[in-house]
Length: 178
Image (tube, rainbow, N blue to C red):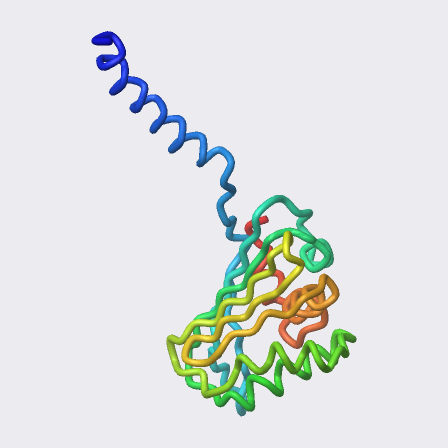
């Protein structure tokens, strides 16, 4: 019986080490693929609108098309660099969906419903795709959130930054670390 009591602390230490190190081996961290700044030109002056970073879990070929099509966990994180009225954000996103040929109005409206108020400077926006659930979730700091199902919708969202865009260098920056 005494031998078991002496072994218990050693057993618990080994168990804790296996849990801590073993869990890390199975958990995959987010990998930053790149960061850029969305710029709007107003009367020959460039104005920074938001800084955006893109992350993935897993591996993907270094191409914008491959990132759009990748059915893996991935996300965007924005930080607003200036105040922008929510109607302007909503219209810009609607235009981007249209430019990239995505037209499911119900899904677009649900997603854009999260942008319910002005985005203030330094507010955060996160758009994340969960590959297991096949769902894209948007969380708007100071606004709302929405989850939209479907791989088709995820591809529509990712095409906004990696497809047809008026600032193609932004998409390049977002995959620069792949």
